Length: 396
Image (cartoon, rainbow, N blue to C red):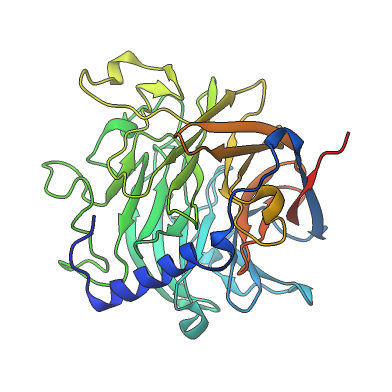
């Protein structure tokens, strides 16, 4: 500035759809054979200017890319006609955009988007920055239905805002720790707040007067004093997470305090994972008073030094497209807002991870996204540009 029992029919249908995306088409591509030290990243500029602080990308079935502008608008990019002049959604009237990090932060097409035009959006709402998850129809601001909120009034930073459907058909949403430095509310390790968490909810049913249900296998269901929506915790500002379409595993980019930026990676169904903040920052001790004697903290799979190699990690995605599958299939790609480094990580069969810097992206990357074919794109902040990401083999 991220074990199921019975299912009702709606959840089963969406779970099946998500799983089909994980197991068919480009998602079956095996990890690319090119070693990371022989791989380099490329970018093709698609929109040279005109986007206003873009922060998220989502592909939809008709081939367009929906691009979130932080002020509260969504723009559409069509590969054939370019960037549409007018927004396809404008919800500026409900955005709190005070501070650098507030605004419209996330977008997610519903699995039935082609039929319903429904989206999920995450933003900081008026009047005091409340973290808000809503369902809305593209082009129809009046259709908004607020699903879940979390107060966030004291500080303007660390809002999270990523949205994704897992292979289980449930919706996942990331929330930052509440802002300022040092986690002043101790939110990361507290289970009575959604701050510093990724939550997991069933948005296809309503339960107990709420417009969503909590899956019965969420790790803190029935735990006294804990919010049952929590899936994983111990996060500072998870600025972009994603699921690997091939295996359903979860990758998280979590912005560091001042020492380490981190990428986390856990297998599918590892609910309840504690990533350590604010006992730890990355792999390092941060505040011993926040550490519980019997707690288990999960280490990141990749870290780099804040202020020397960047300033804020931008979590990315595992490449599962077809165009560059032979080079980069199965490779996780992320970046940093300040250094623009192109970080590449591969998960090995023995549980270890291999990483490398494979080039540099355009300045001030804010987010990655994919089109309907799984091809990778990025947007950057103040330049307001859109790029397609590609790969090449290094030749000596």
